[in-house]
View 1: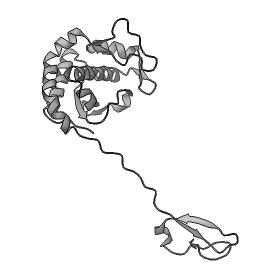
View 2 (view 1 turned 60 degrees about the vertical axis):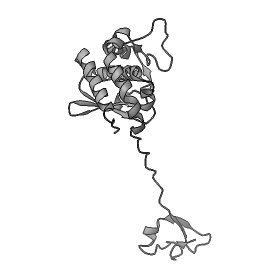
View 3 (view 1 turned 60 degrees about the horizontal axis):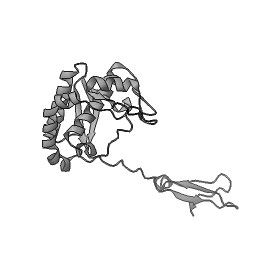
Length: 209
């Protein structure tokens, strides 16, 4: 799991504490930062989990951090709305986490986001992009300043997730017997080394072709 370098980690932790002050129903959470691109298009609850009494799985990506403190606060509030729905057992997305429904929007409004007047929800993502309210921007003004201060130094040191290991198919040898027409089979070298494999038709061992 990605981890955030201090003092960015501290600033994100302080932000979550302040969000919990405003929304006490939220549990403690461990927020990570990562150099990986944002995965916000897929917000299914399967990415959230518990580590004891602490919610984990909330990740702020480098492309969000590059947009500055206000964007980071908005993103963390977005995540807080998902956590609220998660602990309430409410389904807030569908289409594999892409479409954000009205249940999500209601939770987003609880934490300090709003859907801009006159803006239509999108056909594929619904209410996925609620914005900071004026009140939330004022409430978290100190957090925005703190994040703007620490983000430039933290960005170059963000952890880069390890690439998934590539599973190589073991090399296999092609063996053939003395039948006419010839019969062939494939086998790994370690199995071949264990002893002869005899053909049940011609009675001869299979040998590398």
